[in-house]
Image (tube, rainbow, N blue to C red):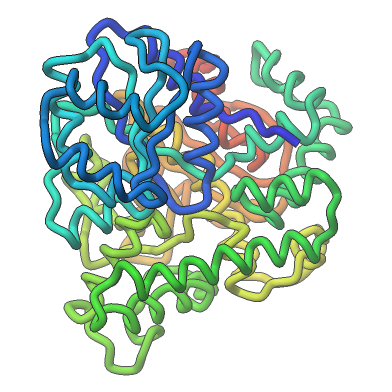
Amino acid sequence: MRIERDIINQFKAWKDTPNRKPILLKGARQIGKTWAMETFGQECFKYCVKFDFDRQPELKSVFQTTKDPIRLIKELTLYQEQPIIAGETLMIFDEIQECEEALNSLKYFCEEAPQYHIIAAGSLLGVAVKKRKMTVPVGKVSIINMFPVTFREFLRASDTRTYEYIEALDEIHHLPEIILNKLRTEYRRYQVSGGMPEAVTALLENQGVGVVESVLQDILDLYELDFSKYAEPREIPRIHAIWHSLPAQLSKENRKFIYKVIKSGARSKDYEDALMWLEDAGMIYRVFNISKPGMPLSAYEETDAFKVYSCDCGLLRRLAHLPATVVTDPIANYTEFKGAMAENAVLQSIIPLTDSQTPCYWTSPGTAEVEFVIQWNDEIIPIEIKAEENISGNSLSVYAKKYSPRYRMRFSMLNLQYNNGLLSSPSPLAGWIGKWMSMIKPL
């Protein structure tokens, strides 16, 4: 089964941009970067050539002998059966972290040969660049972040009619019960597979939960091997400990990351590098507390108070050994972790919409906590997450009374509605925030 990825549209827009730069594609392992590049090349160009610096180490010598783009093109042509023609060929530089000279060559293609279309990507690119002290041609590449399959993409593949119904909405109103129930069902299935393309495909092709679990476990095992391959030896046990502490961290009622959950007596200075490694690898998101919801949000982050979420809710579920049957049962009682799963899934929908700017969260000196606060254009919007239909609690009200935001959002399993600045939306529709905001008239 083919899953349409929204990033292809980003590539298409880039293709026709006048002042185009080479793309440097970043993202966690196993999210489909190579597939997306190749699919784009096959669909939008006459020719598509891929150079894999891991599988073809001999390519490195080409970039070590010259920096001239035209000469590079001539030599690279010898490694391909298809021609490399400006405007007609997409060049893919895969696993580019294996060749620093190839990474640096993007600068010269940008300056001297912008007529060529190039997309470069690599496994754990951010980690490799830091470890090897490689130079990234900042300002000479367009950095695009890619993410796991979102629920929006999942729904488009799993239930096209429901997806098209949501896409066709031109005002905010209660959804028919049949649509709402379909959204709930598909969303719970999405939380089982998460957004790793191989796991999504296994689920949607009805290969069985056993296959889905096997795929997710294989990815987790691959991540463990990456710790050993790309991390400094002294950091490996710390990275491992943080990663495996995620279920316990998120099972706490307030979800704030606590070092002693990792290990008794653990100190922040001992684990900061390990946290940054996991961030650079795209495996986690750190959501920082803010002292107040000011513009820009990043100016008010309190770096010593944060929550850590997984890049993918399916991986988080598998890491926690939470059975799929529990997730798909709407009345299953797994309390705090059910809330954590709900937050993680909504976060996955939000981040691709906010230009990769990770949301923050807010707490009052008392007990109020708003799960996410986002910067949407010139608005600061608080977002409350509820796992099911119980929306009790006054945290959003405490925030609203203190800061009087123009807009507030609450995601739960209740129906869609908008009233007096509060958007109440089913959690599955978090990926349509832009649509809802465009429909809301200024107060």
